Structures are given as structure tokens and as C-alpha cells.
Length: 429
Ligand SMILES: C[S@@+](CC[C@H](N)C(=O)[O-])C[C@H]1O[C@@H](n2cnc3c(N)ncnc32)[C@H](O)[C@@H]1O
Image (cartoon, rainbow, N blue to C red; front, side):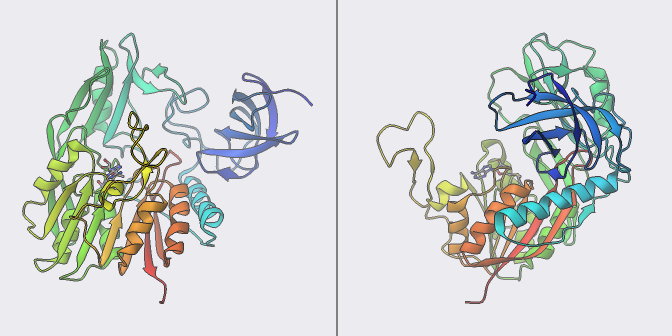
């Protein structure tokens, strides 16, 4: 058996797509995750990680011997083997990218939740899958060189623009990258729906104070929603995503006037404001967010909807469910590495509708248990990772909730990322 180490090259016939932006191939019984390839292609792949004894190897397709009909030329000079970690699917035609993501979602649901689903990935308004991104972080290296970060590396690739970014951000990239930026760790660029472009240099090792304030305006079925956000706040990155996701969440949630709604992992309130409007003056909206830079803005953005209350804190802490103990507090007090805070009296005992939009890691078993214990009529789960969605769908089923409609959106074209919005309803008691 030939040994494969980093730098070795091997001819492979590429197998199916897998979660994470690569395809699976096998060589002499070993699994190799190959980037920049397509199913059924024959490629020369260079090993980039792993070696003798590793469970699997990672590799990059550096030469294509037999190309798939779905292969296209990448538009960006730093997309491809050894290049930027952002666009891992620029070599794939846009319809095939959507099919790729649909396959991954269906596979994660099958594997992790035992659900068979045909998935369709819907486009957002971006024509050709380029010039859509309204947020870009430039990495800055020790020499002060700014650029895009190389895949699984600290190296920085200087670029004079980014084809997936809106033109206003590419203009800033072209202005910034020829200069040196000493002591800077990250330069965050944002372009808002109100036409503001912000450039924020974050110094190495400094904690964020949120940065300056920006305004986003989101068209919703109940009229425009105006949100104040901070430069460092989380905000959806595709220019059409705020509108499309609010529409989809409202349609999935079907909130009736007078109902109590929970919006968990609320950010600055993209969903909270329209959900509060749907619940009306006789209803109630409770929004939960932990990022200190976002919680004050969430409260400000909800100021015109007195039926809404913003709670600052972690969802798991406010529910009083177990989570890993914070570092530095692992000795004494409580059991082992688990931390179980007291449930906040501000968390309601029941809810009609729960919307949750957790970070990539998902919500986890304890949080899902606390959500199902509220016995909501509907749960709307907004997921940016199909694996976390699949895992949490399993916990929701354990709690008596079945997946109804599932929508998937191509909110990150040219990358393997995809957003899902799934509706869950209580199975008959
Ligand atoms: C994917 S974003 C969604 C934000 C919002 N729904 C939106 O679309 O703009 C996830 C949010 O959850 C927050 N978050 C992360 N972990 C949290 C936790 N344990 N408890 C509460 N919020 C959390 C993050 O700060 C972030 O604002």
C-alpha cells in the first residue's frame, strides 16, 4: 500500500458530495475529502492534511483529468487549490451548486434525524450568484498586510476586490489592500441597505465595543422595518437575505394576534420586530440575545413595540439548562464540567410560537428540551448548518415535534454554505 502524506499526489475517481464543501473519494481503502472537485471526475489530488494513522485525509484537486459537465472556470484568481477559504464552489455551475447543497441537506436529515426529504434550494435575488455579500472581514497578518484568509491557514492573500462582495465593498478592498495596517487584526467592511459603507479596523487583542452605528431598512409584509445595528453586530450577509428570511419566518410562524412568541438568538431584532407586529398589542414577544454589542440595540429596535421585551443573556442560561461550565470555573460548585444556572423568572412558562436562529453549532439537546417543554403550537428553526439542523431535528422529534415545511435558501452562492428555515408542529397527543 502506498503511503500518502501532505504534499503527495494521487489520481482519484471522485465520489459523492459531503457536508463541508468537499467530495468523498477512496484510495486503497482510505477516505479522502477532496476540495475543488465534482462527483465522477477523475483528478490528480494533492494531500493537504493527514498522513499515516489519520482516520481520513484532506486533499485538493490540482489537475482535472476528466471534468464533470457541471464544472465552470472560477471567476476569482484566488478561488481554487491553495487559495481563499471563502469560495469553495466557484468551480461549480450555479444550478449544480444548488443541487450540491440540496443533496447535503437531504443527507444530513436522513443520517441524523431519520427523515427522507426531497430538498430544493431556492435562489435569492442575486442574478448570477456574485456581488451579493454586504459583509466582508479582511484578515491582517503580522506585517500589516490585509487580504482574504487562505483555507485552514493564518496566511493572508492580498486581493484587489472580491467578486462575491457588493461593488462598494470591492472598492474599499482595492483601496485598503495596497496599504500596511500595523497592529490591526481584522478590518470589517459592511455596506447597508441605506447606502452606508463602513470600514472598521479592529486592533489585535482588543475586545469589541460594537463599533459605530449603522441603519438597515428591511421591507416586510407589514411595511418597512428600520433597524439600528452596530458595525460588529451579526447581520445577514446576502443583500436579499433580510427580506427573504423575514418573509419565510413570518409565513412559517403564522403568528395570530394576541399570541406569545419567543425569538431566540435574536441578534438586533431582524425577526423580533416583524414577529412583535404580527402578535399585535394584545400579544407578547420575548427576544433573547447574548452578545452585549447587540442586546442594547435589540431593546432600542423594539422600543416602538411595547408588547416586546428584550432579554440579555444566553438562551441556555435563561432557560436554566445545563451547559459546559465557563473556563476558570471548572473547580467546585456543581457537577463536573457542567453548569446548570437557575431558570430566569423572565422566561415565560409557555409560548404559542418559538423562532430560533442559533449560531452554526445549533441549539443542543438541553435547549431543544426547554423549547418543547413550552408546548408551542409551532417552532420555526432557522439554521445555517444542515448538520446542526439534522441533529436538533432528532431532539425535536424526541420532544414530540415533527418537521413540516422545509425551505432552503442559496444565501451564500459560490460557497458550500446554505440557510434552512424549517417548521415543526406538535405531533398529535
Ligand atoms: C445566526 S445569528 C441570528 C441573529 C438574528 N436572528 C438575525 O437573523 O439577524 C445568531 C445570534 O445568536 C447569538 N447567540 C449566540 N449564542 C447565543 C446564546 N447561547 N444565547 C443567546 N444568543 C446567542 C449571536 O450573538 C447572534 O446574534
